Amino acid sequence: MKKELLTRRNNIHISGSGEETLFFIHGYGCNQVMWRYIVPEYADKYTVVLIDLVGTGLSDSSAYQFSKYASLEAYADDIIEICEIFELKNIHLIGHSVSSIIAALATKKKPALFKKLIMHCPSPRYINDENYIGGFQKNEIDQLIEVMDLNYFEWVRNITKVISGNLEKPEVAEELEKSFCKNNPEIAIHFAKVTFGGDNREDLKYITIPTLVIQSKIDYISSEEVGEYVHKSIRGSKFVIIDAIGHTPHLSEPVEVINAINSFL
Image 1 (cartoon, rainbow, N blue to C red):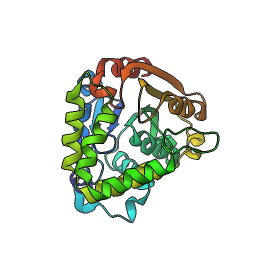
Image 2 (image 1 turned 30 degrees about the horizontal axis):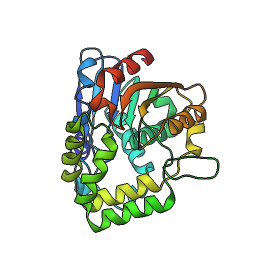
Image 3 (image 1 turned 180 degrees about the vertical axis):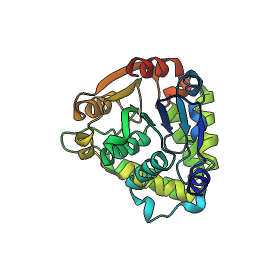
Image 4 (image 1 turned 45 degrees about the vertical axis):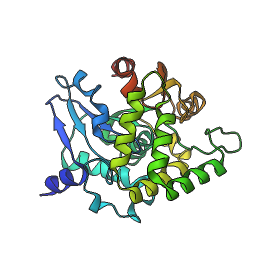
């Protein structure tokens, strides 16, 4: 019964029968379909887990409680619960963007449950601070949220082009726009406030499992400087800058991402 509830809540899809597990977690506004260029590489060798975070994709939006999901900790708890209830073994967590931090929090809470962590275009804090460049001033984030509140769909049309960052591949921005627009605006705005207003820098020093940080050479959302910060904050982590433009290289340059993952696994 519990497995059925979780499957419905997070639209869980588990395939393969390998002794090791690859657990993919999508980024803000996205869904598990975004991993479709990556997953086939591992279908015959690993158990592959795909989910939609609560409130996104085909998850059960009725399970979204604004008080519960007021921090990324709740999403990390969901990941841990899925791993334990489905008795997953030898788990490699792969998170994109904000889900890199969600995955990191899960490994901080239950390090023995996970084997490796792969952080794909991560950012522990988007707002610039003293001696830290997150990429945005606080007033810019405040304006971003204000625009979302006024007209979520107009904001989506603009921000997805920035996230893609790749004029030569407009289809990436188009896919992101469609994905963002399918989500409940009220939930999406709340998740944005949690994502862009959060600060998880201190959590990085508690990550003890082998970790890989994958960074695009040009990313207007999470810069190389941010990726370098994450890498230096996690003891013993590896840092790879791939030949890709934009915040979603698993869509625009999947071979680069696969090569980085393979070298780490």
